[in-house]
Amino acid sequence: MATRFWLTTTAAPYTPATKRGTWTDATSTVTGLLGRQPAGASATAVKAETSATTTNVLLGRWISAPARAAGTLSGTISWVLGRVASATAANMFKRVHIYVTVGDSDTVRGTLLANYTGTAAWPTTASGVAGTNLAITSVAVQAGDRIVVEFGYQATNVVTTSYTGTLYYGAAGTTDLTSGATTVTTAPGWLEFSGGNGLFATPTSQIVDKFTTGIGSRFVYWGGTFWNGTFNRAAIPPAAGYPGLMATDVGYEVYGSSHYFEVVNLPTGGTETVFSAVVLGPADNGSFVRTKYTAATGNLTFENCVNYADATPTTLAFDPVAHRWWRFREAAGTFYWETSPNAVTWTVRRSMATNQWLRFGTLRTNFEAYAASGTPTVAEVDNVNVIPSTVPKVWTGSAWVQKPVKVWSGTAWVAKPVKNWSGTAWF
Image (cartoon, rainbow, N blue to C red):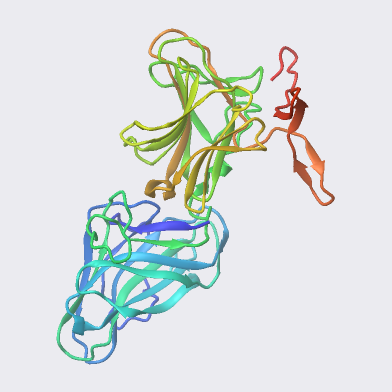
């Protein structure tokens, strides 16, 4: 799935000594982090040229954090960046060179896009300029490698008149820059590879824990959360301090990924008692998506929260059998909230166009419970991104395929989860 980066004002984590593109003037000193989320106030990289021949001017370099995993970066690249030329007669065109370093070294692992020059002249009003679905050369990236993007312009005016090219970067608005838009100081510019999912952030689908011997290293937990060793689950006791369980060891990405889990027990008792599963951004700014159970109403709500609330959530009466499994999923620009009785057959409960922050490669996920007072029963979570072996499979002739168990209700065959006997109870 696609992997989006933003040109930030954050300091570059590492800067290669050599500028690799073919640049007539490569004296630019602007460098920054090619980040998995926007960052910094709006800034500009500016340079004039006075050459009487066609000239290639470097404006800046942006370097990614190290790759987290090995894999092949291939497919296409697109971008929208804010640019402006000082005059129409400048005849300036975008110029881009992108490659991968061998770790923190000046050695090139491979070149993704070599000295690409655009065909549309830069505008004289600062606005978003796009590059769309440009084929890149495949590079086998190794963990620790970095992407380096060199941006500049080619001027073909062949006169000694001084003309200036300006590239906008930084900005941390909540809507990305679009082609032709003049919001270059508020909407952040970006570039996106059609592939690369999982190379520069861990997909949420890789947060895997069956809680067989405890709460694993993927998670941190607080507020009285504990491992239920009798049934091998994570148990979260609702309280005023929001006890919880969070996967935070690395930045995650849900774009092109999913995150599912079994909600074995939901709390009863207490005052204002709720249990929530949440995907949230890198900062606690009130923006998150969640599925929430409210004990007082017996309802599930599927929420897209801004400033910690969603005025129009999708609401559903909770069914402990039909809604035993919950899932967040993103695919092809749409984000989904889903439920299932068995982690095999899923029902979409809500969907929306994927917003900007859900594209970040710096996300977190958590489970949390709250009660204003009283001593409610614990919420219990199990089988994070793993289907237990009790889900049956059938042989198709070439592979074992998961299939739900069905029972006759009297009028129809209905999917039902399979349970194990622990020695004291069915679970």
